[in-house]
Length: 367
Image (cartoon, rainbow, N blue to C red; front, side, top):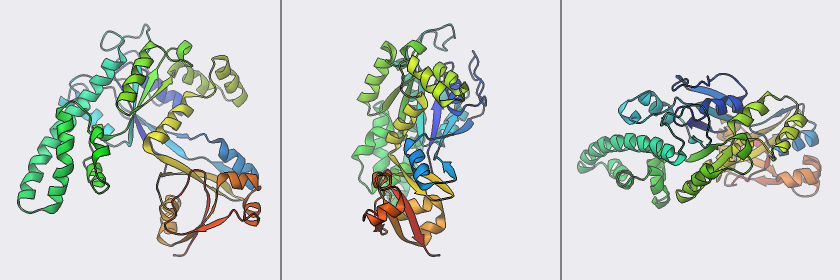
């Protein structure tokens, strides 16, 4: 499964540099002028998880297959995008397709020209969010009128839809993103709200792109972004695209560790972005282990065993019988499946079992 994050921001904030570093490719141009990214570039990266290496060793698996994370590098946005300025229409269409937004904010001084003429990440964040809110506002106002007409005619579905549209519309008119109303919706309303596909309903991760010297501690600019993130229940991560670009060039893992350690870092920015992204999208990892491969898979928190089985193959979900389950800690402590079974740590779980992070699963099914 994995998840899909759109990298957005104003021109010249380091989006494409970060994308190239994260995916170790040169698929996206990085240049000192706006709109160097015209088409959305997509890159898939492996999600680093040290647990998977241990499971491979214990299971004597021939292959190790991590789960994947997808990044989409989306064209830079300027003021007026909601009205089609710059590459606005394309930007809005591309962002609608992603699960979450990684909003890169420039938190460093430098020779590269900023499209607004000065460095102010809060202003930049507000510029992008305002354009997204304006696009959502226009979309909702049109759709609300149509839903109201259907509701008057006795359409129950239209009435239910209006009940989630109206609070979102009120929030947008008050200058707040649509995601601020999610917590107030009932469990029945949340699927309807998701159907609206509003741009500002997507979870946001602010990536504060700082200079190399501030990668470990952040700076005054990134501190302001972190304050904003806390205030709106978003997430902020400090990252140096320049450092990530250098790390991406190193092939040897020891060399990477030494390079990061020299800069006062314990892990790459990619690892921090992934961890924050998982929290943002409420995801967890489960594993399958066998002689052919040890593999990591991703599902949402709260997913039941059949849904997890369906991530591997639709037949597994359709013909689900049970899930033989071992907690990661038990799998490691007892040296694998046989040891865990002998110790009474292998459980047979049915359709109502809620998958836990780190579960090692073996699905029984019949189609």
